[in-house]
Amino acid sequence: MVSIYGQTLDDLKSQFKENGLNESGASLIYNYLYKKGHESFTIANLAKETIRFLEEHYELTIPEVSLESGEETKKFLIRFSDFEEVECVLIPFQGKHTLCLSSQVGCAMKCSFCYTGTQGLSRHLEAFEIVGQLMAVKKYLREKNLEKTISNIVFMGQGEPLHNFSAVRKACEIFLSQHGLSFGREKITISTAGYLPGLKEWSADPLKVNLALSFHCPDERIRSELIPLNKQYPLKEVLAEIKKLPLEKKRFITFEILLIKDLNDREEYAHQSAHLIKDMSPLINIIPFNPIPGSSYERPLDELVERFREVTESYGIPSMVRKTKGDEILAACGQLKS
Ligand code: SAH
Image (cartoon, rainbow, N blue to C red; front, top):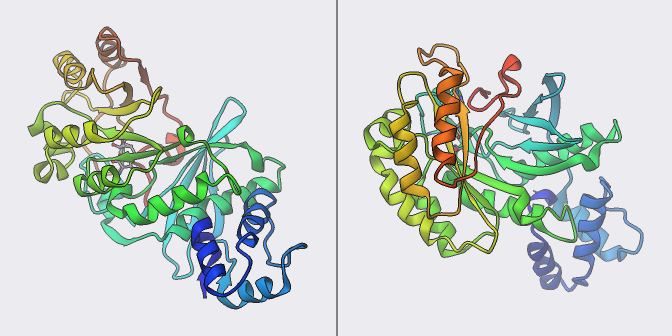
């Protein structure tokens, strides 16, 4: 048995075809599972033999979810069938929600400022486990009549999404399907530390969602201290690869700049950053460091953060400071751990 939540519409169609079933049943199932939140295969209008086929081959389990904490920003613990766990975070924004998903249990990147990195990588998530996080949170919201409020998805939870790109791609295809959840492509963002092999896979076979790069510092030496992966795949090469990604009209690339006191918060880095990316349809998202247990890094002064923003903005790059949400419950960026 495999999970139905890991099947793209095309997967289902081809399996139906191979088994002599009517392909149109696939969009009907998508409609019931994802639009109506149905949790069984007994669907009116679906041929009896299709229902039997589904029951024999697919399971409908949604991972267990428990609300860990949070008044506004809510952190959920998601438990899979092998008892591995990840966290995902629901962030309110103007009456809607952004859902921050995990792509791996733990992470192999070991970024020096990130709590998830301290636990190492346990395993990749499968597509159905990524979709399962959304389904589990939707189910939680349904009880409050809020299930339709998830408007954006960001891969900024645990894990490096481009290190598990095939599963992330598949999950995105499921999110994008117009017969199901029908997220707009501009509503999904994959954030990467700069994992070059994954970027290459992406540019070879474009997936039409947004990209965010954890840019952090234009100085290669400092960036390597922050993101050890930079020693293997330097920023210069990562930027060159990103330039190859086909970008549609009106699309932007988000550059996340995590600022740490007395390390990379200097004004000259703001100038250098702007120079490097100004021709890449950039948006800059400045993230003041969120303290994590056991780290000596500190949050930068507000004046320096604002100065950094003014400088990049002066190059015509829309720049904003990410307001920290959820740090009181260790649910802010980089604070997730299983
Ligand atoms: N692996 C991906 C996505 C996960 S992290 C990536 O690296 O982009 C999502 C964002 O949170 C990244 O920009 C990351 O650099 C940032 N982040 C991690 N730890 C943080 C911390 N302690 N404070 C603030 N931002 C942090």
